[in-house]
Length: 419
Image (cartoon, rainbow, N blue to C red; front, side, top):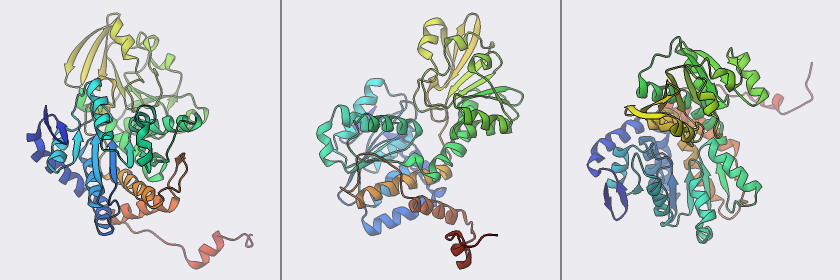
């Protein structure tokens, strides 16, 4: 491990490759460079310290650069032990960013690094999963005085934040960036769909065509995963607890059944629910020899691997693939049951993360502009900001859209004219 006054990374000599990967991401995220230029001109974040617990990837580095361009001091750590790209972490350290992250972090280091970020006394927190805000509220309440607000990136984090709000624990405004149309309807659907399949392929090189893929959860992420598995020639089964989503899955052409039934027919199982122990021992004991499990939910709790580890022999088959022998049958687990798209691959494509991280950057700007005016609740960004993100991305893609005529605007805002 390499460390300095403001960093702790695996290998600082990886910085050159990290710089190249960040450059590659920036080429596919032109809207972020445009925002960075505006922030630099306006000094949007002058005097602001931003603490981040995000996946330390090349795309995240582009967000960090945009915040720093606006004058922010930035301290960052990972939000998952297996999602850091070590070359990117090294590159950020070389650029002078306070960064504490490496791929394969121990549980002790994971929480120690969160503490290191909080030592910078951030005015704004950016979370992916809610660990920073949780630590401030439960262990470092003295930091609350300097906090303007925070942002949350993912569905699982929003679930935790709404529970905090309901229980009266939340003490500062948190913007649910995940609730942006330009996040959950793009990142979760297009990003998770592609990157999850990418992670499983890199872990196993398995053929999807002809396989039965069981997708657990049919939210935005599950819809994206199911569509891409189907596109690769798989037979897709969906398991759901929500009646409307189960109905959607049926109307989209997928089989729907309880996990107790799907367990015996599936070849590949992918969890994207945000809940705990979606696949349990009673399901695993019914699985075929050679069944493969992967999780694309934020936390590594969707697969009950603790129970599996106690009941089965384990050996590492490939860098991101473990074999468990249970009742004489082999079950394969990708990426240690953690986010497979980052544990075994590189996460979402840069083009997708451009809209997500534009949401984070503009959410930070919104917090600064509305300092002291927002309630300690979970907040959704105004629709005009969400639309601004879509406009910026269309411009970056070179796409032109129509606009309403004066007559059409009047018609849509009135009630007098009918049949």
